[in-house]
Amino acid sequence: MAPENFTSVTEFVLMGVSGCPELQIPLFLVFLVLYVLTLAGNLGIITLTSVDSRLQTPMYFFLRHLAITNLGNSTVIAPKMLINFLVKKKTISFYECATQLGGFLFFIVSEVMMLAVMAYDRYVAICNPLLYMVVVSRRLCLLLVSLTYLYGFSTAIVVSPCVFSVSYCSSNIINHFYCDIAPLLALSCSDTYLPEAIVFISAATNLVFSMITVLVSYFNIVLSILRMHSSEGRKKAFSTCASHMMAVTVFYGTMLFMYLQPQTNHSLDTDKMASVFYTLVIPMLNPLIYSLRNNDVKVALKKFMENPC
Image 1 (spheres, rainbow, N blue to C red):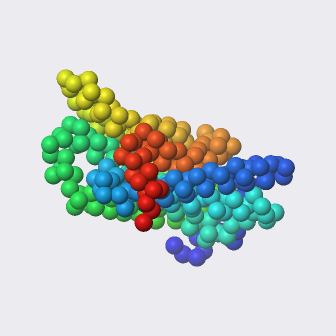
Image 2: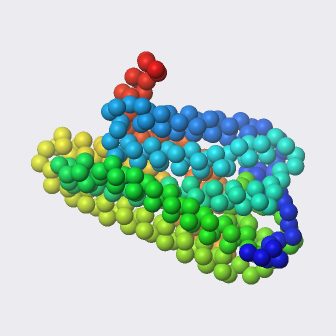
Image 3: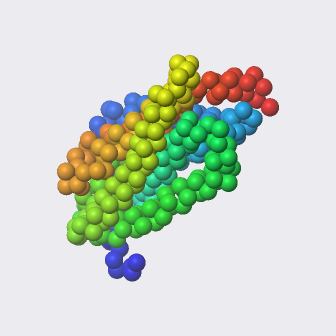
């Protein structure tokens, strides 16, 4: 992009979650706890699935990378957010803002794709159990994860420069706690039709493709489970999918609310609350969802706590 196409604004001001001075310290403590739990939970999943020999299956390989995307997503947002609770000048430079948006897009799109990959993994495991380790080979696992990260990166390097190609020549106050697309475009004094269209198409394509993969996978999984003659077998099959289904429902519900609507219909305050949910709450909940409902993870954690070396 030519330099003249960039904004004259050199920094933005992040309004944060709330503008009330008396709420800054309480909110700092709440979000610090959320972030610490997110770090502990996701680092725990990454560590356990890396060191425990019983957690070296494709399912836990994908779970490890879901934890990496959760951890990355929170870490792109939370540190700056926490600092801004404690300082009066809540500024972020133009290029830091662009980098934050790019990082957020990379991790959130990678997470969307990773959930689809995990749904496919569960489909093969339950519908073709005898061929599971052959079909979902180590090579395929590496390929799927690599494509997931590559797709997330390509989305970030297309969408982020597109958002920052518009002119910001009046207000530089972002009604958000991080550099998100909707509040940034709301500040622009130039035509935002093209970036809005690109963002909408990208978000819709990502979510629809991922959701179709998840829905088709789980439709076949449910049919396969219902055909099982053993009630114990049905119970075990449902148990192995319950965690993923719960995580998928919470995540997609929030994302659909956020992005599959025209930018003109956005309420920035409502979006702010939804953003708290999928940037901090969901990454904190996912390790709990997957560990509390998974005996293998609980056994691995107990073993690791007894003998960390």
